[in-house]
Image (cartoon, rainbow, N blue to C red; front, side):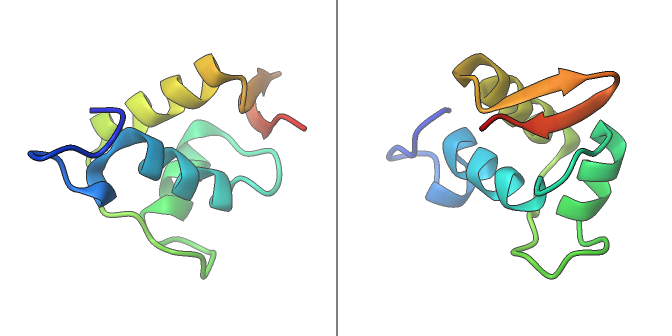
Length: 79
């Protein structure tokens, strides 16, 4: 589920979804704000078509890998 496989396309792998999420996280955002951006909100970056469950699992993966942090209720990209 983290990496693409025979039964999971590259677009659905959590690593790919996480990379797409990071493209939308150029400033501090709430989880719901980031979800709106990824679903086709304000930004023109690549839009993600996925369920909310996959979105949350990708956020969990990014947090475990140390790519994002939560500061005062906002998600921030770790430098």
